[in-house]
Image (tube, rainbow, N blue to C red):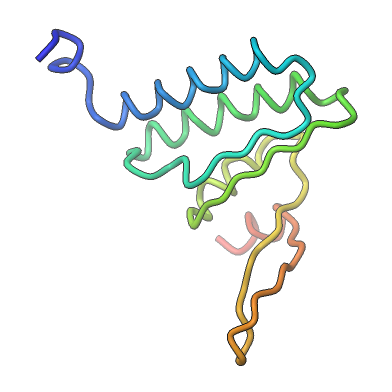
Length: 118
């Protein structure tokens, strides 16, 4: 193994890979309208989840004035959504649910409501 593989935990490598992808999106997709992350907190410990939320909050802040920017995060991690909600730039999220007939539907939810349910 390389020296960095012995010294860096798996969760830190996953976080680094996500941040590198965001940096590449920054470089190659100037004024990119949509960034999508699918289950970004998988394999991350609590500390790295917090670091990712902080990095994404900064990413969102930098694009706040860009009219076409949307961040789509697909996650089961409500604590991560709550961490993102601490940013002044995130007000709501959409939750996918199923009804009694197993049909999926979207519900728009306030991040403040999620934070108050703790």
